[in-house]
Amino acid sequence: MATPSDPEREGGSPDPDATDPAHPADAIYADGPSTEELAVAAETAPPPTDAPAAAAPDTEGDGTDESGGTDAPDPVEAAQPDEVIREPEDVAPDTADDEGGEARRVSPGGETKPLGGGEERPSPKAALVYNPIKADGDALRATVTRLSAQAGWSEPLFYETTVDDLGDDVTRQALEAGADAVLVAGGDGTVRAVSEAMSGSGVPLSIVPSGTGNLLARNLKLPLTEPEAMVRAVFDGDSVPMDVGWSKLKRADGKTEERAFVVMGGMGLDAAMIANTNAQLKKTVGWVAYVDGAARSLPNAKPFRVMYQLAGARLHSSRVQSILFANCGSLPAGLELIPEASVTDGALDIVIFQPKGLFGWIFVWRRVAWDNSFLRKFRAGRRVLALRTKDNSVRYSRGTAIEIAAQSAQPVQLDGDEFGEAVSVKTRVDAGALLVVVPKDHATDGL
Image (cartoon, rainbow, N blue to C red; front, side, top):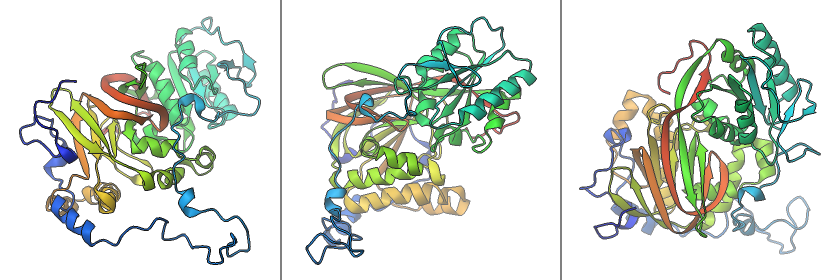
């Protein structure tokens, strides 16, 4: 990263002489009050309380709650983050009881088999990689076997993920065995790991929606409640080349690690929220559990200094809460973080969150939940957005690569999985590196 030739700019204010690639949102979008208006609002706002307003105090002082129970939790303490950023190996195993940690291949009936082999089966043949916790393995194996036979393919290969193999190792085994197509069924982490191993292989990947997030399937507009449709598409569907993002993480001790992502990654508060989300709660209620992580992370959230540079653009300095690099733009519940994002454009969409105080977070939420997800769908709504005054709470950029360096190590996430802390992240896009299967005549406009 080059040394900046101009003084450090506080708050990430745009440089009028900069040559950053324009983002499509900028043409019609200005999203809030000016910095001066924010300052006035902050001065007139009531001082924040230490505890959430909805938490009722213990008026008796004896630790009892209204229902007569004891040891009611302190709402202030409950909202605090645990101040522990967990490395991937620290995450509680997402695995069945008595499941071993070694990668494994299974028979059509589910019995464990030696990992090697499969080459003896003539092509064409498919391979299914699935997370036994997120997907119904028995039903999927039966469906893939039945449809393979109907299509005249050989008996398929089956692989289960484990705590020690999220899917990338067994996917490489399937490719070495000569699989002509790979199906993946599991959560977003399983899809990420399998996609990493499939990138650049030229072998098509079919995403069978499973788990709770299904973020890539949602962005590809795949049928979320019809797993057989995505299995059948392997044999009579189409394929679309999509981009894959790669992030090289540099740790505080100088070690580096490069991992792929297919939806989005980020440094800062978004990663801290994921790290502070209760794993058991996520299993129970899915993506809604991230509200728990937000409650734990937001009270003590503090901006941090980063230097960032898009490929072919000027170096910038800013204090941010979070910086995202995205391949996709849609989130669960119909939320549109980046309406213009595309998995086939060969570019990354960069989102920088730098809200100023409480009002800044309100504007961030309004932009994502109201402006992007509702108003922008209508011509009249887009005219309203064009009349808004400028606000830098959320800033967008676009490029083929970005390098981010922080003054101190910050948490990092890729496709919703925490990847520890890093002092710098170099992210690039590998255009069209992954062939994804879509049903026949599936609309690909807007992908």
